[in-house]
Image 1 (cartoon, rainbow, N blue to C red):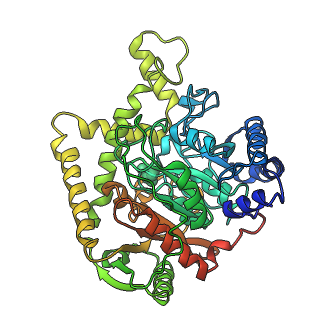
Image 2 (image 1 turned 30 degrees about the vertical axis):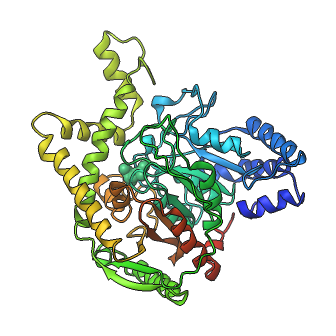
Length: 483
Ligand code: GLN
């Protein structure tokens, strides 16, 4: 039963082959058995899951249907869940129980999903390896000595190991697409404003976006359908109708113009990954797509711009964790300043502290123009590059990451080495565009992802291309040994 996709689960439940309660019990037992190897969950919510599963079974018995009714999922632990610990992977929020549900959590619960738990993540979503979590690193089910990617590494490892069919993630600079690539999943970062950020603990508000992680594009379409939509509680949510994502999966790719940026194939890219990307291009050509070389000339400035803007916003967002309003409070403070200093010093890990300092520096008087303002100008140039490219092509294709999953600890002493791994993903966040990563093959037994980018609100096009690719390839069906 653990091999079933969301689409297959929906069919099985509709045909009464099994109940949501049976499925939920099976998966909870599997998590208890296998997750100790992976550490992909921070909290399990067994009681809630069984209660939601029984309620979903009762709704089906009353004649209700729906692709998510009775479907087991998990939420990245930065989506607020009422009465349940929402830690954001940090000691700062280790005993924070959210007073309300995030919009995404509430919408998915209303659609009938069953929440099995909250998944592990990099602290405050800062990282690309899931090693900055206060709750310990997550292991990659394809090789337990390697990282699963981050920051949504818990969601990725759990879905890849078939502990559950799908999970939510968030993507500020690649945190859905990169762990999806490193664990052989399909993951979608929607257009900025497509999915509500209300109740999603903020990292960098102008970049953060929630989205689905699953094994197939078909399942991402199902989960995104339950997550997307206008939310008056999020001032950057966009009031744009949500199309039927499953309905457009079968569109023909005949004549689809795919742009491949020449800058993507630079020296930093593992040549074995480059070869797999070229293979995926050939596969799409067979399906009728037309390939065109394009240029994104400002791509080289994306990492420096992102690593100014994201920490700047983080330094502002994280100022609320002061031991008074929110978060960990130190013992016996001498005075107010001592309370702030020690609460924040004890509550935040080293990567978060580094980013707060970088961000506060970039925003300080005298440096603002040189760093923050400059980074914002680069951001506009990057967006303009994409706008020009999308005048010529319908989709942009390239690698999701320059390398496969690295060994645990390999980049710990050099944060910049980890930042460089985000080179292909962060441009979509800077421009607010939707992006998807899907399985494209293996290097040394480790999964490789191909990334597709589309114009604003063209999530349906991304899912359509990925689904057609998956109908003609079997990379996404491979299961890690031992799981
Ligand atoms: N790796 C990037 C960072 O550390 C992206 C993280 C994310 O998307 N949340 O900022």
